[in-house]
Image (cartoon, rainbow, N blue to C red; front, side):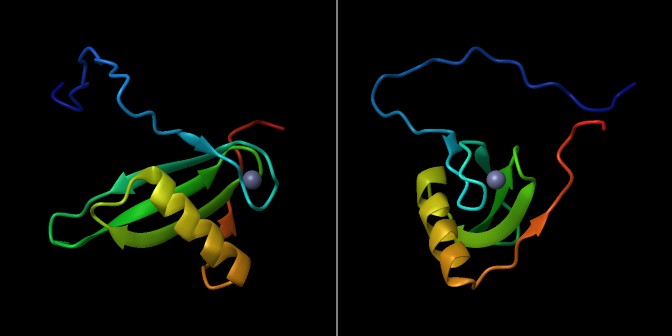
Length: 97
Ligand SMILES: [Zn+2]
């Protein structure tokens, strides 16, 4: 009991701006890369962007300004990935063998 409260609300889709949710993975070239943000309460100016690929299992975290959209974090990640300035690891993709 108690536990997690499930957030349930109707999503109003506005046609103003469409932000792609899934990006191309620079590692495996599959369009399976998702980015989620983790805003820690004590961080006033930055948030963590968690980059995950559902295909190859790539995982990375980078710090981005609060104003960043997923697409911004994505391009920053790709830059860092290509230049080798970010630590990435490969987590097991959720599939039983
Ligand atoms: Zn990948």
